[in-house]
Length: 134
Image (tube, rainbow, N blue to C red; front, side):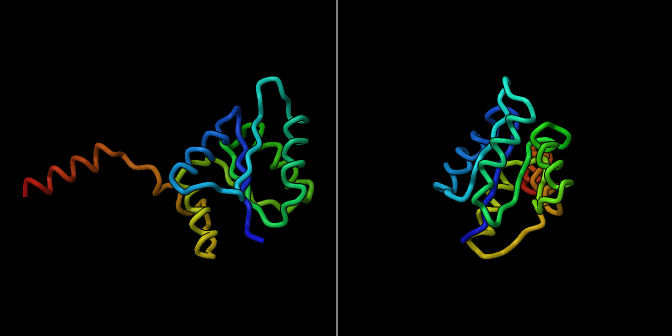
């Protein structure tokens, strides 16, 4: 059985992230989403999360925001003894890297490479213009 990814977020961000990633990488049966909806509290979110992971043996969790309810609920489960790998600050390059890891049979340390995902495009474009001038 392959590793699973559980995306957790405020609102439907996690669902949109999965859908957008699937536009690039194709359908992903091993990616699951758990959304914290406006009318829900931590208890309801935890129930949905536990229901999602109950049949998953090997999974990692990406949360939208460190300190937010989805991340805090999963963090609490970790502090209670559940073995869960949790990363906060999820983005599309992280999800694509997860998919590539699954395809290649590799494992990434997502926290070590996330800064490379943020680029100041103006600086890149200025560098390209400088190269053309030479």
